[in-house]
Length: 298
Image (cartoon, rainbow, N blue to C red):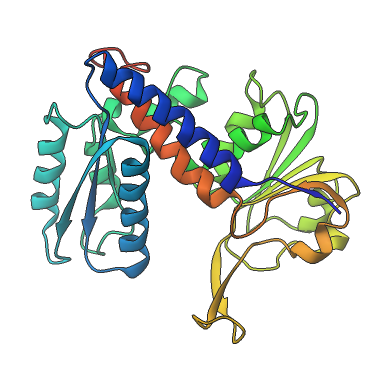
C-alpha cells in the first residue's frame, strides 16, 4: 500500500511555522500580515472557502477582512473595490474569490490587482515571473503540490512527470514548476488534456502523475505503472447515501485501485486541498515581508 502524502499534516506544519514567525514579528513591533478577500454573490462553496481562509488567518495570528457584495454589482463597481484594496496600505495581499457573475470579465478583474498584492498568483506578471524562474507568488494549489513533493523528499530530478489537465490554475503552472531548474523540479514533463488521444499511453509512462481535471475516477490502476507517485488534485462532490450530508468528495484517481501500485499518493479529501490554503497563507506572508517585489513593483 502506498504512503499517504498527508496534506493536513503538512499544512498544519506550515501554519505552525507561520504562527511562530508572526509571534516573533509582534515582539519586534512589526506589522502583522493582513489578507483580504472579495466575495461576490451567494455561492455556498465560495462562502465556505472564504470562511476557511479567515479561520486560517485567525489560527496563525494574521489579520483578515472580507468584502461581501451582491451579485448585481457592476463590473465597474467591482473594479473600484479592487482599486481601493490596491491602495490600502493596511492590506498586504488580497484575493477575488471565483467564480464571478457572468456579466463580469474575470480576466479584467484579476489583471486589475496589483501584482505585489496578488497572493493568488493569477496576475500575468506573477505568472510570467514564475515561468521565467524569477521570484513570484506561485498559485496556491501548485504551491501545495510542490510543497508536498518537497516535504516528503520525493525525487523529481530526471523523472518523467505527466500532468493531466492544463488549467491556468493548476495544470499549466504545475507543468512549468516541475520542469524548472529547482527542487522540486528538473523533471521531464508531459502535459496532457481533454483532447489528448490515448491518455493511458502517457499516464503509464509517469514516474510522477499529477491529475487535475475534475472527473471522478478518471485514472484507474491499468493506467499507471508500479511505483508511481500520484498527486490527485480532483475534488468533485458526488452523491453518497452513506454520508450524513448525502455527498462525498471524490478525486480524479480511483484511490483503492491505484494506491496498490503507487509508492506515494494523496488522499481526497485531506491531500492537496489543505495545502492550497497553506499556499495562500505563505504568499500573504511573503507579501507582508516584501520578499518578492521589495517595497514597490519596478
